[in-house]
Image 1 (cartoon, rainbow, N blue to C red):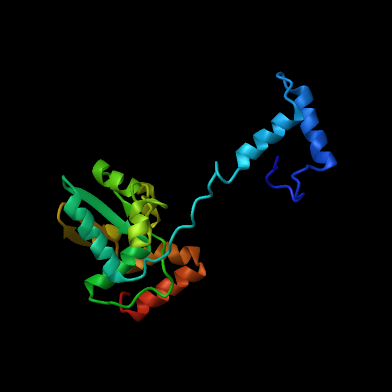
Image 2: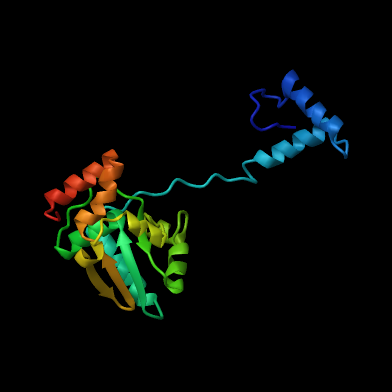
Length: 203
């Protein structure tokens, strides 16, 4: 019998591990044997019964990827829906609006929409990590709560831009407003995106 996780090639637990299992067996109301407990451990960690999730793909970098995604979803929505787009994907949206084709200096793994549309929310849920959407596009959708918009500077709605894609209407905060929470976080990737936005003339 092979015991997963033990270095012993014969699958034999150490004395301390064996004592632990004997204690479990002795105090169990069903008086399981040591082998029963070991077998349960094997089943719990067997690679055939448990599969670690894949790491998310990080292939969102070009402005065109965002507009193509919005066009795709706008065409499948059956009713009008509103979306507010934030994060790196929103910066790429602004770049696409200006005809910029230069990609981000560091790829992103997701787009961050906010919506109160049930139909649009379901599309987002179907596009999470490991979804068919991610396999097709190389990145996933991270549906955000409306409360995240409180992190944007006051008055951001007056400075926001908008676009329409079939039944989908999109509001995108100004690049400077999008960068404000990123610069507060001040991680290297956030600083790179801020520098990229400045180089592209977005701010």
